[in-house]
Length: 291
Image 1 (cartoon, rainbow, N blue to C red):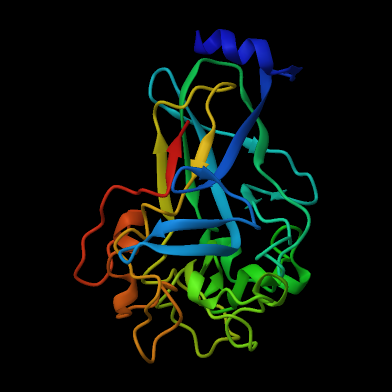
Image 2 (image 1 turned 45 degrees about the vertical axis):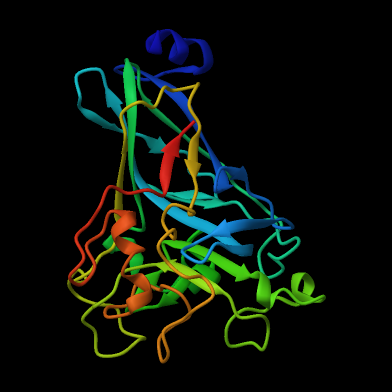
C-alpha cells in the first residue's frame, strides 16, 4: 500500500541509472492540539495552566531520510529552491507576521520537497537543527534560508534551531498584538523556547568554533509510522513546556529556556526534546508527532 501511495502521488524522474521519485512532506503547527494561528491565544499551557499567544514559530530541519522497507535510511535530496531549502537544510516557518507575530515575515513554509530513489518506504527520520559544518558561518553572506539573521545567535553559537515564543496573558496589553517587539526592545516580555548549540569553544561570540560544541543540541526525530503522501508531521510545543511555568523566569537568566547550561527553566524542557540537560536525562522527544 505504501508503494502504491508513493507511485500515485510522486512523479518519476528518469535518471541515468535509476529513477527518482519526488516527495513532499507536509508539516502542521499546533498548540495543544489546536491549529496554530498568530492571532489566536491558547489556554492551559505549562505547569501554571497559562493562556498564551505565540510571538514566533520557526525551526530548521536537516538530514531528512525516508526509512525503507528493509529499515535502511535513504537520504532525501532536498530541492534547492533558493528560498527555504539549501543543501540538506530547510526552514519551516509557521508564522505570517500577523497578530502576535508582528516581528515575523509574511512568507510561510510548511512543506519539505525533494527526491528519493524509487522504492518502498515506511517511515521518516530527520534532525531538528543545522549541521555543524553549516551552523557557524556568516549569515549575511549565506544562501537562503540561512541568511535569516532573526534565526541566528552569533558565530560561536550558530543558528537558533527552533524559535517558539510564548506571550502569557498577563503581558497581552491592548496594543500587544501590534507592538510585540520581544525581549530587549521594550515590548511585551514573553517566555521563549530557543533551541541551539551551547558550550561552543571559541575566543569570542564573533569567532566560529573549530570543533563541535559540547552540547550540539540537535534533536533526532524518527517517525516509523510515517506514510508518504498520507501522513502529516505535527509540531506541537505544548507537551514540551508542560512542566514549565510560563509566567515565571528564574532571575538573572534568559527569558524562558534558551538552552543555556544551568538555567533551571530548561530542566523540564530540554529532556522532553530528547536531550539530556545537566543532571536530567533525555526523555522521548515530544515536540514532533504524526497525524
